[in-house]
Length: 206
Image 1 (cartoon, helix red, strand yellow):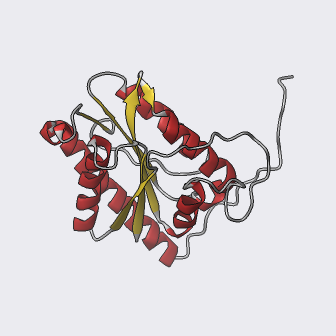
Image 2 (tube, one colour; image 1 turned 120 degrees about the horizontal axis):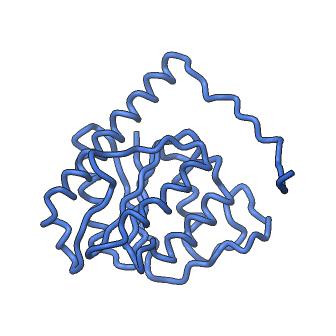
């Protein structure tokens, strides 16, 4: 089993990456593989609602969204990490995830998801809340921890001084591993995915 993580920071080795690494190392101890996918510091397009999504993901191919989609199809679980900008997730991670979920939400459905937010001080709980919205609309079980999945640090490496934050990341990984193993056991026992209905669309309030 494998967990695909997304570093929503433009900084490859900054605090968001290091927090994801803490989760990943604990996952390895639990027998779960992980990969951290970098959004990088290049331009990430917004979703423009063009409706031209295809089997590969988004119709636009000049960034890394479809590369992530291809990996998502093979992954068993997800962790999305974001720095906190103005009490909100980074614009790039939201643009990235908007296109991933709009074009390829089926590739993530029924797979456990978790988000983590990193900040110098405030805004983490608001950022955490925004990130979790993607899971709720996509039939993804949400993985929690012993506190909200947040950790603090400003300069690269400072998250490693946040003892409670590190504990939260490690417990998140343990919970993710437990959930993945439960799902695998259910699959072997013949438990099928729910038959979800999606034919009713109400576009106005009566």
